[in-house]
Amino acid sequence: MAGKLKIKLVKSIIGRKPKHVGTVKSLGLKKLNDVVEQNATADIIGKINQISYLLEVEEV
View 1: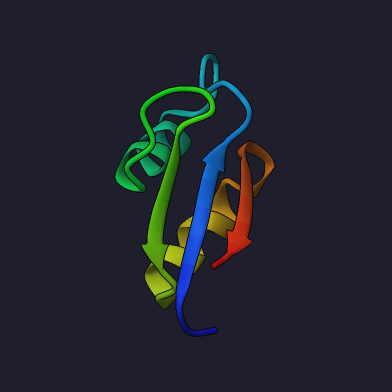
View 2: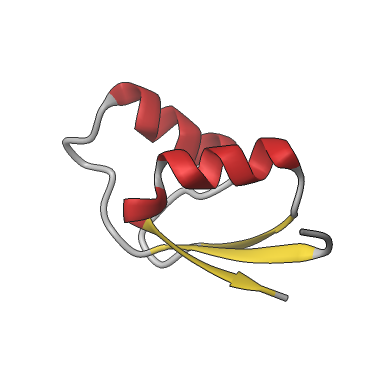
């Protein structure tokens, strides 16, 4: 996968595992419906896979 990914937080992080909350924040997401663009690196894809149940991901 090459290029950029548009990542949107669609579920709340309230009550989630602290590790998952940290992962959300490390992606640059702060609150519900926040959208960030990240490069599609192995590191970012691994983070997305860990918390995929909270996110909506679209390739740009």
